[in-house]
Length: 324
Length: 295
Image (cartoon, rainbow over all chains, first blue to last red; front, side):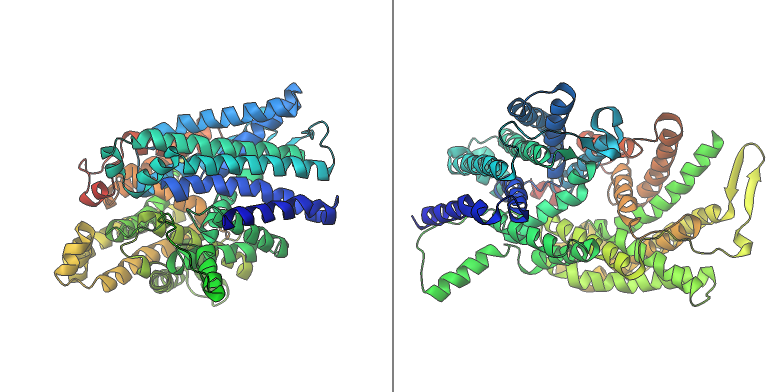
């Protein structure tokens, strides 16, 4: 019940935010954070619940964004159609790359995702006729009726909430439990009649489709797409956001996105300092705090308040099981 | 055509050198050390300042880069990897990417983003040429010599010395090696010293032959990883063959196919090889016990 209350409070605060933010910078920032929340949470389905470390999430973000933008600019299709097709195309690409890539494991799997990320960026950059290359894709329209920043904020908020609702429902269903079984021990999962291939493929397509959805929202908001929005660095950022908050927790990635976006705002004139800091953070997190910032923080708060919490089985972490 | 092949071989020799340094660390400790890309950049800068600011001879500056980076590599191992021994490859990869980000951007903050080139002494500015067929500055030939020397030196070290034998033991079976009293921390330090030293040397060579900048490390280390996979993980000979092969393939695509998608071929090749032939083109066919254990 307490979790429900927390979610309700968070939603209320988010719904009231434009009262303060108006058409200004705060609302802009909130829109970006919401879009990145979809990205981080969907990446968390892979990293935290399925045990797949993917450095290609920004590529799927970009595939969704470019598909949506190109449909709007070159064919003049309305936003809602672009959005649906973008999610479909992203899911199909994920299916095509996912199925063969699951033949590899561990570091090789990560390398396949890195290679796919680099290929995707190069295609976005190089295929001028379709994407506009380094000039970017200009003139993507905002959806009709949502031209103002506040209206678009509410649109993004609604989609973000829906997406999170879908993810949480999925994770709490038998499918979600099967994913966690695959994460914890593939052989055991197989013996229980869970085909790891099917569930990994499902998780990959599901998470990538959501990344495509985020891409569509992003490009229609900025009215512009550029290869740099979707490159390797962005994939690493997302990865760090999930790690920072805590993989395999619902609120962890949201917290991670919030902290990272704040750092980005504070240091936005100093990209090198920020990336230096991110690098050190990655090492420090994996070495000292593999479960991320949020879980220990919550434990400390709970201890300070003297609240004990009974019998809630928190999912094991996938990022650093100790196998010899 | 021959010129294209020759250029490809030179690029390939550099890739092979970096791939060997990656192979040393990966095959012995299972650490996918992408941070070597950053080490390479720092090595290039050490050599650059050695020559320009302290007036060192290029050879000595390159040696200083190698030694300095070897030491630096040991420090990196202690800070970022020693506590992760026994963790998954995924965890080590995260740490390695952190090191890469930190080193490249540290270099950017310290020394700026402009491209530089290490000045080369007159004796090495000559050009070897067969008119109309091939034209090769001597620096590029030197790269071959250095890569070959590094390869031979490494082979001798690994087969002839006590530490070399300990390294091979850890590579084969870390648990058994530890049980038999192999000092795993010392082996780790030496492996990182060798790998990082060779990466630093590679950086100095790149800086002297081409131009260098703070962000040259990531593409080189990624390609080096392609090479390592092509050659079969853990095989130093495979790294050499893979390096030369990828250099030539890259050079051929760039000249005859496309310059717009210059990395597409290399990375598609990587995905194909990983998916179809996970042991690499020249790697052992048998799955290693620890690879199977993670299944």
